[in-house]
Image (tube, rainbow, N blue to C red; front, side, top):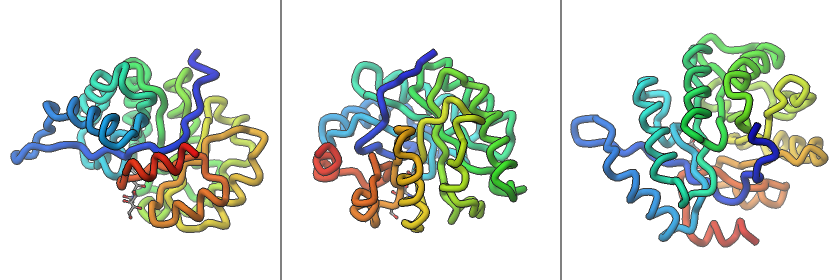
Length: 230
Ligand SMILES: CC(=O)N[C@@H]([C@@H](O)[C@H](O)[C@H](O)CO)[C@@H](O)CC(=O)C(=O)O
């Protein structure tokens, strides 16, 4: 069991998935990418196969290979590698979660299924719970991004009692502009020590004031990492 694990906080880089001109994944540059993030940007946590990484446009096989390459190249250089394993198919999501555990990732994140959508909190939680159970030793993060999934269940509602359903739940990647919802998530879960990772770069300062413990974003810079480490 990996718990308790070091809390995921500060700046988390949402990595792009490098491609060749032919549309194949360019694995050969991932090692350089790790060095760039660590040495040039001062960032040691990454979020792989998310929105920026276009995980949902990759095949399951590609997602597995990309995840593995980041974990391998990040070994002894990165602090935490979080793999987004959300998918429309529960089985694919579970396969990716299990794979993330096998390769030694530090956590998994999952978005809500976005075609046949969960229409209640309980339906969504049940989906997330099944995915989390496929990797019972890995910290689990819910990736709330209603503008893209169309699943508008408020994060604050989802978090209420979540540990009873998902014991590995460690935090929230909040990619929405509803700061009232975000503030209520933070306020109502202070005792739980969850990670509250904000995902809308343009509103990060406001989110920090409201209690964000970190940020997952595509715009990373040394200035931001300094800000977040203070
Ligand atoms: C929708 C989207 O791409 N959001 C970005 C932001 O960093 C975004 O690029 C930024 O706020 C500019 O709009 C990240 O939250 C994405 C992200 O963390 C991910 O790749 O999963």
